[in-house]
Image (tube, rainbow, N blue to C red; front, side, top):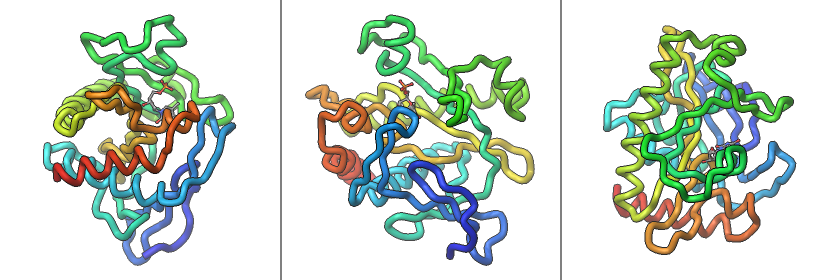
Amino acid sequence: MKADLVYEGKAKKVYQAEGRPGELVLSYKNDATAFNGKKKESFEGKGELNNSISTLIFQKLHKSGIETHFIEKLNDTEQLVVQTEIIPLEVVVRNIASGSIAKRLGIEEKTIFEKPIIEFYYKDDALGDPLINDEHALYVTTITEAEISEVKQKALQINHQLLELFQSIGITLVDFKLEFGRKACGDIVLADEISPDTCRLWDRATGEKLDKDVFRQGNGDLIEVYNEILQRLEAKA
Ligand code: TMP
């Protein structure tokens, strides 16, 4: 199914799909990185877990009428997606203060935001993915003003669906990161992945962190907590 390697990121490789023009194969790696790649480790089984978790989440979003690049899961570590041109923005949605917003703005960890906060980061490793505003996004990417509104609206819709999904499996969705891509026809759709690499997920009963923070902070077993997320999602599906 795979042909030429198109792109290699920190957690995935992207290939052209053989004999299927306009489609790509996403191959999930076992690598985990943090702090803009400064901390790096490989975890046997991580690629498989994120492929399965992201598949279940994208399928749920599809059922809720949200258009995404996802086509199908191909095997343990790979999935087929529609080829898009990724808009280099990390769209972060925050329901509860944690991580960089708590640090940057001096907000106490765990403060609940009445209205979710949406942020844009410019996806540029050399610059360290800086926080940017809408005007910067217009300047540094191909996104238009109307598309910025569309992306924010989609991010809130996705938040609504994900809050509900995670609540049903006993998890608080603290925050998460999305990426959007432009299809050949020009439309913007949800792309990339949604997994414990890209979300903060706290157990509602115990407060335990069930996401990549266990690796960032070095205080938990990444595979164990990612597996816990997959088990709960599978039990629900
Ligand atoms: P932050 O608090 O470090 O800015 O992270 C906000 C959310 O975005 C959190 O759920 C983790 C996710 N995230 C990524 O998916 N990729 C990244 O490179 C960063 C910095 C955060």
